[in-house]
Image 1 (spheres, rainbow, N blue to C red):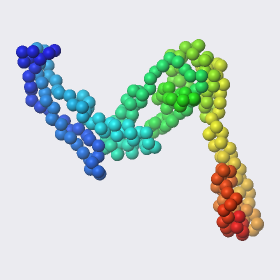
Image 2: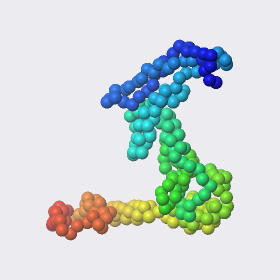
Image 3: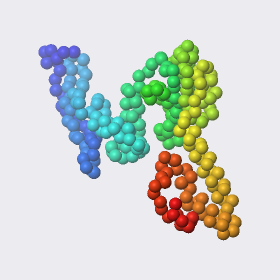
Image 4: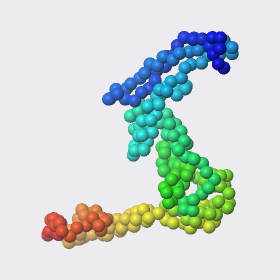
Length: 258
């Protein structure tokens, strides 16, 4: 309604304490005095709005922007909450709201997908599927259970669209294989290279420990082999490109400079 014939009049003020970002190491608040108005036509009251804070909120937009920036770094939600001086639930709510704005739901699927999960709360894992070529996150599900994943793809994507997917890259989670065969009948499964290298590295380290423990209770020569395998274990797992033949340094357990 337009303010004609002075139908809207001032009706006092309302003071709110708004949380601002830290000033140095000190908590900072703003006592924002808002003008209240009264409408004679409908007998309703309302409060003036400000760009500093959203309606019905006591956390400033600058603090929300700081939370969003911190969320891009390798920090836990608890540390972000301590840095912004707000609650953990508020940080989760702001990150979720920002993620919903960035994600644009679509009914089309790319030819190459990638499945992955990540930890977003204590003891809880989320599921995400990504465009393997561009790295764009297509959507995030709050659960990685097969029931929720099936329900999501059956509801959003048609059978024809799911058949258009050619490859899906996953880790070594056996639960995804049966799921992919049911949802994407024409897609080929590709194991992520990172997890293959990780499996080889762990297997080699386990073999080193097994051989090392075999020399643990032997004679003096076996004891030397045990100590060598225990001290220089990083050399066996080191990348070949990081090894050099130009720099020599002494290795005490071998009794020579190599």
